[in-house]
Image (tube, rainbow, N blue to C red; front, side, top):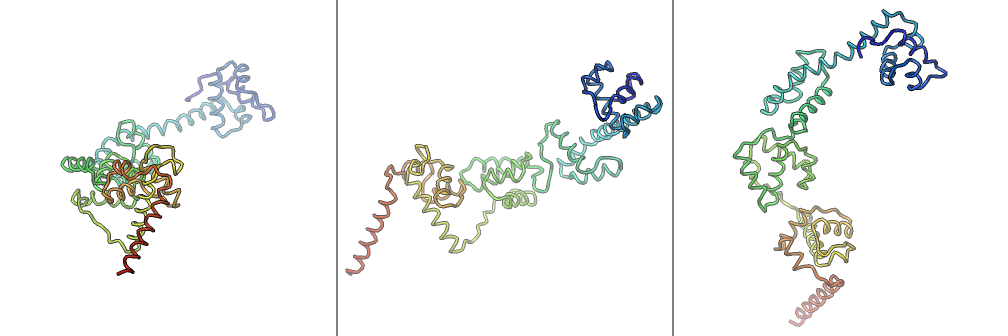
Amino acid sequence: MGAPRIAVSKIRLLAALHVPDRIPSISSLAKIIRLSKSTVVGYRGLIKASGYSFSDFAALRPGEMDAIFHQLAMRHRRPRQRYATLLTIFPLMQANVSHGTENLKQGWAAYKTHHPEGYGYSQFAAHFRSWRETQGFPTSLFTKWQVPRITQEDMDELKKWRRSNDRTRWAKAVVVIDSHRGIGTTNLSSKVEKSCRIVKSWIDAYNQQGIPALRANRKRRQGSKKLAEMQQKRDQIIEILHETPQIHKINRASWSLKTLAQAFEKQYGQPIGKSTISDYVIAEGYSFKKARRVLTSPDPNYRENCRKSLACSQLCEMTRSSSR
């Protein structure tokens, strides 16, 4: 609100009616002074912002009131002028960021050099994010862990990876493409079921060396203990898959990767990823769809019968060995 548009006598009356012991309601003030409630609220806010008490403000001369209202109006107008300056800077800055020639911090530093009275970094970044949203750009800001650009040749190959049955290549393609679209590493980690460390390493590898760095399949050597744990988990998954979901109190006719992971965690107290289960089933020579059909047994005592059968076969083997 700028200079007062209502009579000074009404402003003085508004201030005088604010007696500390009994302050009238907004509706009462509006009726007494014959103003709208919004006007009463607006001028009451200006009086509070002036730093004067209501009684001291009521004692001011008209010229002093005008000066205070003008000062308050200028205080509100300055941020609008600063924001208008930002709107002239953001288009060029967006182009520089998109081409990788400048990051957000560098853009703000250049802005602050030419406009020392301008916004601090946090407000600058918030306004830039809001402006990008209104312009239809990805909402996340450009960071170290984001792919700034993808060549058309790389995009064609990444799309092939995304349609392939190779789980690792699918995950790498999803990370690179979605990172370029502005999705953060935390969401990507959840989507491909990989740690943030691995997701960041893929992004960094692509940014540094391009798609050849993602083609290399680097397999770590697993220790004997780790291999034994993996084999045990694989056997446990296959055991659960041999049983029906109803045995594990899951109301489904057949297993899904999600329900199989839930049953495993409930029975063994360890979480397991859906992609890990899929890899274990494939290692047994089945697709998951075929495994559900071939391996699942309707026998509720399958596991016990399986143990008895295994014990019998071991006993027979021991008998043969001793008779030789």
